Length: 129
Image 1: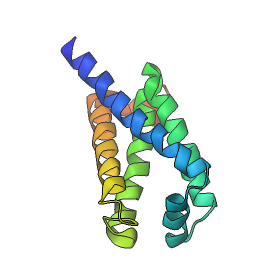
Image 2: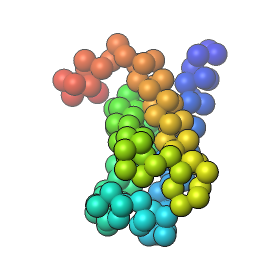
Image 3: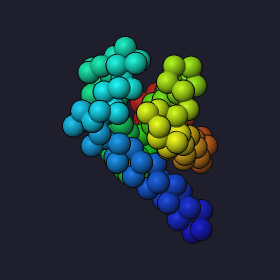
């Protein structure tokens, strides 16, 4: 019982962070435009990553597809972390590293969900969700 509650809290943390950033991506906030321009993928990368993060959030909340959503979220956040490390820097536009920290937290949460569901990875790869 305690493990199930812990996993739901972890899922909710990941989903809250992913959904919270959607507003900035979909409304074209200055910081989002700056980030994706610096990465050379504005506007398609910004909107595309928003769609992927929205999809991951929905999938994480559905028990049957939470592993798939966590894999999608972890992959997206790994890309975000690598972008910060190699292109953007830890701190973007004087945010004190907040975006980088949120990406790390989301990556960790998604990784925990994947690890917890690791015995179902083969089924996901065979599309037996």
